[in-house]
Length: 90
Image 1 (tube, helix red, strand yellow):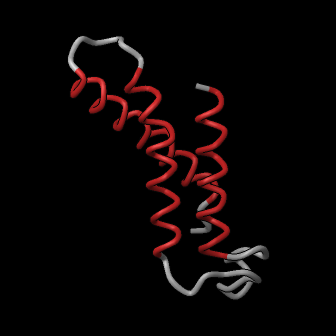
Image 2 (image 1 turned 90 degrees about the vertical axis):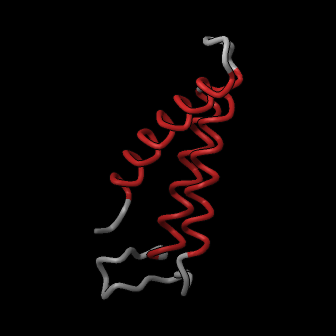
């Protein structure tokens, strides 16, 4: 799980970079390299959740695959949400 978490962290950082640019949102709301839309941010956050949830769902800790996938997605949303709260500008 360390590698998926590391990759997901990079995806969350890329989402924040896409939203606010290199100088951050605290500098007049725009930064160098800022993307004008939020689509890339949403895509990168979905990728981050998938990077954490899929490997966790593949571990056979429960006999039913849907249960594993459901709990893995919930755990991934909590982890990625916490990381997003740490890097999100507002």
